[in-house]
Length: 377
Ligand SMILES: *Cc1c(COP(=O)(O)O)cnc(C)c1O
Image (cartoon, rainbow, N blue to C red; front, top):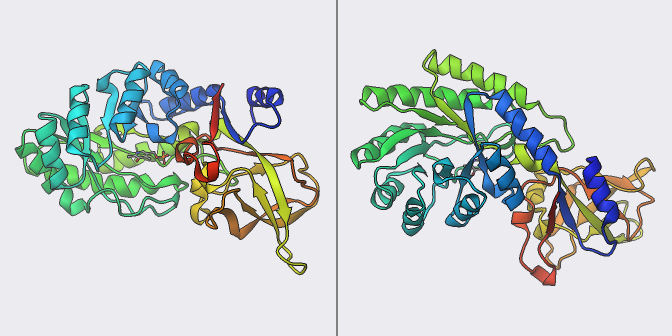
C-alpha cells in the first residue's frame, strides 16, 4: 500500500461500503516503466482495464494512445483530451453503425479477424488502416483469452488481402498472449507467426507495417512476476529473431500491467461461520464478491493478496465469499485462503492489486448493492 492510499483510508468514514482507492502516482511510474522498457513501441492503454477519467487524462498528457472496444470508450478517451489519431478501435466485434460513428469522430485504426468484419470497416470507415488479430493459445497466462478473438494464422493473409482489395490499408497483425502472462517468452511464439505472415503478405505485394503486441503484462498478486524490463528485453530479442533488421512499427496495449497494482479495495468482514461442528474450514463473507467487482476470481483465476488488521496471528483455511444471494458468489473455495483465526466480524480487510478489471465489472445493483465506489487520488 502506498503512503497516499494509507492516509486516504484513515480519513474515510468507517461505515462506507467497499471501495477502490487508486494512486495515480503508481500509474505514472508504471507508464514510465513501459516507455523505458520498450522505447520504440507506442503504448495504447487498454481502456477497459479501468476507464477512470483521471487515469485517462494523466496518461493522455504523458503521450499515451488508447485501445478502445466501444464508442463509449472512444468518447471517454476524447473527453480526456486525446485526439482521434491516438485511438485504436481494437474490438474485433463491432456494429457497423459504431464503426461509422468512430470514423465520424476521426478514428482510422480498426481491428478485424475475418472477412465479414473487413467488409463492415470498408463500408463504414473507407480508407482506414486495419490490423488482423491472430489466435494465440494463451499458454502461461492466468487469465487466458480462449478462442473468442482472432483467426488462425493461415487465414490472416486472406483477410488482409481482402481489406487491401476493398480500399483499406492492410496495416499489420495483432495478438494477445493472454492476460496476466507470466512467461516472458510467450511473445516469441506469436512473433514467429507474425513474421511468417509479413513474408507471405510481401510475396502478395502488400507490405505490412505494424505488429500490435497486445497486453498480457502482469500485475503482482501473490506470486512474484518478472519486471517490465525483462518483458521488454525478451520482446526485442524476439523481434530481432523473427524480423531481422526490418523490425516493424510496434505497439503494446497494457491494461492490467499499467493500473493493476495502483489500486486496492477496502472491504469489510460481514460474517464468519461454519457449516457444521465438524467443519474444519470457516466461511468468511465479505461485503464485496464477484458481483461487486471481483469477477476475475472466476474459477479462482486471479488470487488477490488480502491483508487484515490481524496479520501475523495464526491462520486457518477459509472459504471466502461475497455478500449477494447468488451461490456463484464465492471467491476462493477449491483452494481455501489462509486468514487469521482472530479475524472478527466488522474487521476491515485490504484486497491488493485491484486497480484493473474491478470497477468496470461491478454490477449495477444486484441485490440492491451499489456499484463499487472508486476514489482516484
Ligand atoms: C483486454 C485487452 C488488452 C489488455 O490486456 P491486459 O492483459 O490487461 O494487459 C489489450 N488488448 C486487447 C485487444 C484487449 O482486449
